[in-house]
Length: 473
Image (cartoon, rainbow, N blue to C red; front, side):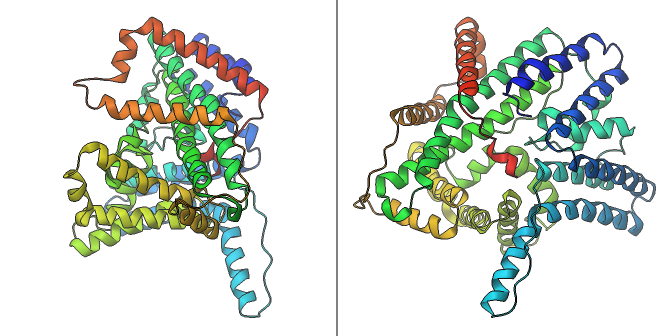
């Protein structure tokens, strides 16, 4: 079930919201309504996998109690290891078994040995997000950051809470536990602010991301040998803007829906394309994943406490793992390793060099690095990525057969670029804030947003739905 399809917008969403408002007089009833709705929301798309999630939720609750009762002992470490391994086993089986089997099969055949059967395992939507959040709960209990969940109802709601269930933000248990325990009752301000944010997300997704996706698909589906310099750059730039508006659009919808129910989720984006270095980019892009990596992988590896060489290695390992988390393919692994290299270079000398440049020039350089990375991320293979990057570095390369790009794709890409440039320019205005500006001119901004929202819905009903990019992760 997608947030912007008619079933959710005109039936499921309104029905759940009305039940929550009019039958949720008491706290426990609000929790029951939200949990039941969240389970139904996920079961609509994953009717089989949901039973495995239920079983793993039960395991988490049992393991967390064991960790808490044996705190500060080797026994608690063993229980934590059991819980983490159990959750990672779900992720590895569903997401990486086919990838591992495919590569083992290729290796065996290269050695003239009999190959193996490659299993066909469907990837459940949102499995990476679910597993990472469940791990945070167990680690938080082990560290003493939070107590075990007071009830299975509250922990189940943390796992299944439908606004963030399928593609984040990745919410750490200690960041939201008190809100779930309090179960706030939504008010008028929550609805207005939340629904406005939700509309913004729908506009980003349907008007921008889906149109840009058509442009990217058009280029990446072509034989690279028939493309030229302009076409290669066009395809990668289409995707560069697509992934930003697609994922930030989902985050806006998730944060907005949660706010409508009275909950505050942490922000997941902060104008990432204004970044002046790769380090700055990762402080602004998918903030919840970066925060998760720092707290649950980088620090346990030793962080920066074991000397410079180990710090560089830890940084690279973390972003190599980030690439692997994003997908079971060599392109994602290359993208993660690539980002890890530039984070190390930032720490060695690159940030200092960029800081000596004008901000706009440092931003251009950082964006070129990011765009090269997105080429690996979007490509269907490493060979396609390499061929596209070669074309992007060859200004005189001409397409053998020009690709007819519809003008509406180009217009949307130019508007997307203008939005990102406006974000960059806003940094030069003293004390400027986009949210404050929207409130100051509320009538105009809300009117424009409402019209764009209606246009987005019309487009969504007319065109085939395109799933969110991060659903595959």
